[in-house]
Length: 159
Image (cartoon, rainbow, N blue to C red; front, side):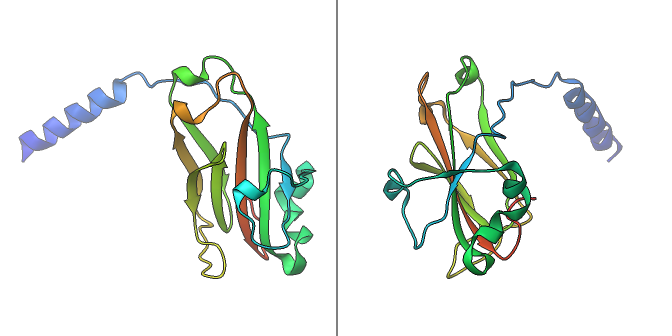
C-alpha cells in the first residue's frame, strides 16, 4: 500500500510539473444580434429574418422582458471571421451559463445543446456551455455564423 501511495505521489508530481499549453483566445462578447420568432422556427428558415442589435445591458439583464409573459424562444446571432492561425490549435466554444436551454449552431450545423426546449422543458441552468469544434466546421478566411437558440422561462437567460 505504501508503494502504491508513493507511486501516486510521484505520478501526480510529474503531471503537475508539465508545461500547460497556452492557446490564444478570440472573444465574441460584442456585435450580437437577436430575433424573437412568433412561432417555432428552424435554423434554415432564419436567413431572411431581421435580427436586432443587442444592447449590452439588455443582453445581460433584461432580454427576457422582450418576450410575451417573459417566456419563449430567442435566437442570437454573431458573425465573425476567424483570425489566421486559429485553425492550427484546438478550438472550443465557451458560452458560459445559460439559465434555461440552448441549441447552438455554427454555419448551420448543430454543435451542441443543453437542457430541453418546451413543451418538455428541462433547464440546464447550472451548466457552462463548452463545445469542442473541428477545424472543418469553420470557413477559413470567410464569415462564419454562430447562432444560439435559447429558451427562456421568466428568468434572465445568462449568468
